[in-house]
Length: 236
Image 1: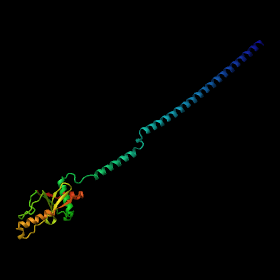
Image 2: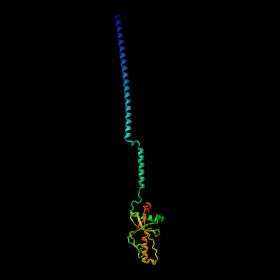
Image 3: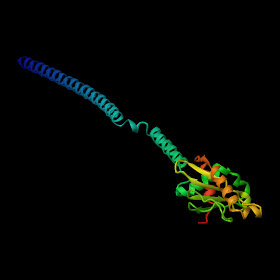
Image 4: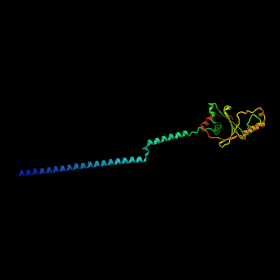
């Protein structure tokens, strides 16, 4: 009987010990699970915060880059604007080219004087026109064929076409944008008895001096001026 009681007591103690061990094991396991859950939640929260921080930093960086270099946002517009400006500058440069560049002042003067007095009828010659230039010093007889002629009071320039019918112009420059034009005839058609009379010749040539007129010379059409210069022949 005592043995049976001892056996029963031993079994009871064993069962109590197993229950306690199982309970501790269960509690330890539960604690471990809770700790794992907490660690996982903390890790997820940390990851979320890092992701938000990374997005915020990225947005901030992009904003700063946009502010510091706004041209990168509208590079297409800038390129187009630059191209348009370059085209406009090239167009203006082309339009501002002077067709008379490279010609001398005298060449331009001869052409402008002819255009101012005779007009652009030289174009009617269908290309068969030349502007001949002859210089005469002061004192040169106005009528070179007959005795008694008055001389030019100044150095003069005689402009003529290729043919006599295309006109003649004798002038002296006043160097102020005007000329003094002398009405010299293209042909001296004087009767023989008068041509041999020096007094008559003197009177006739004096009238030419007296009827000289001052003519303002405009700049004219530069293309017409250039066209005349291109067919100008300097005879002396």
